[in-house]
Image (cartoon, rainbow, N blue to C red; front, top):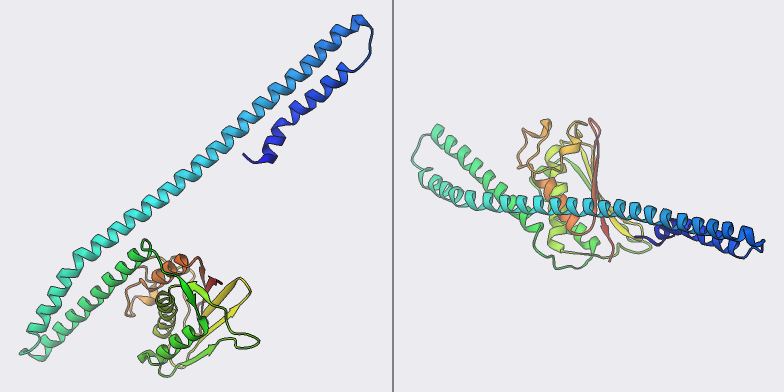
Length: 302
């Protein structure tokens, strides 16, 4: 229990002791002496009993609070473990059948008419999509459990590499991509992290922006630091995200109404959030339908 709480609980006892000393030091005639002693004893006992009652009540209250915190933590840990096991089982159960399906499709793709070949191509595309889905699920499950090997990551060169790869993306044609990274008076400080995972998180955001924007929308990748965090932003002038969808976009497999016709598994943003969380950072999104979307990553500085 905190010292201030102990002091608050002990105040009645201290008050009783002071009054007892006051009465004990008062010079009065003998007939009043017994009354004086009885009163001082009563005050002392009252202070003691009140202190014990308050201390017991405070102890019970904070013990219950501690128990609630521990129970919530245990429930969260158990839920995370159940989820991890489910994702691992799902990946295990789907991986081999999908590989067999793709191999079988490769064997029967030749020697058929055009309509059959198109149907087989569509089936193969869906098996590829499911294979990517299981791979992403496996990544998320591993991220939540495996230890990260952290090393100083220079964010300026990392962002430049991500931006260069995004420029080569087929969806970048006709869109205006810009990169803004501070160079003066000093470059971005390093961030303790796994370079490959941070690269993946930021590239996923850029790829999302490319996927949901159209010509001639603009996409900006920019960064800054405030002494405690490096902030990375991916902003676009695309269609934005409906307000009803925004609370759920970080959930696995969730796809908003506008995203259901676009390719993808619905795991990209969940993967981004998992990566940022493992690095002790924060991720947030702001979007206005018809105007665009801004995603903000905040990573603690080494």
